[in-house]
Length: 184
Image 1 (spheres, rainbow, N blue to C red):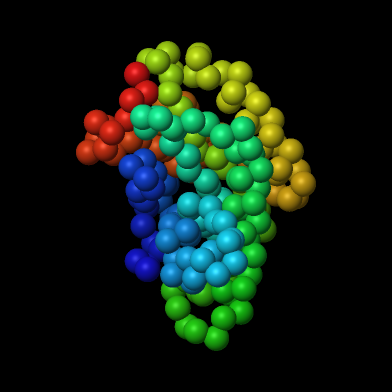
Image 2: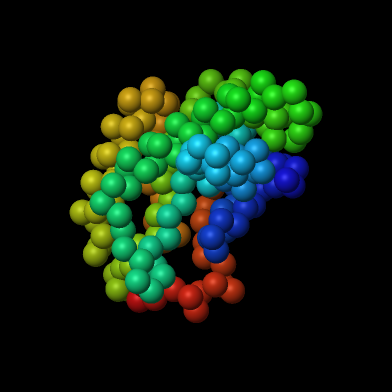
């Protein structure tokens, strides 16, 4: 694992740029998580972003590839991935192995504000959020319910063309992957 002190992270061809001071981890790539996931079917979020006492659990979904369909149970998937991530960082924080992941997990558990985010890219026919407004509104409402049940501080829904006001990151597509998308 690369030391989680990078201001930028690329997840599935989407580049997230964070404000200075954020520590990032591509959680679902951690060897400790992939071992647990393989053995027990655990699910995990794509990104953990930590600064001071604030922690973001970020799930990234891109449905702009040919044949990709938005699943109807996406909010449930996000909830399960968040819970799986939280359980894994709790276990890793108690690990006997001195690893960067254990250190990062321990720092995550000192956070006082846990936040939940779904970054979603959808086919939009070149109309940006106009075509997807009803779906995005429903997803945001469902994320709010999940946040309340988990007793997290905040929740957010983001994508590359929607303003990230109030969020510590911006997102942009990796231009090298653009030919693979069929959203317009």
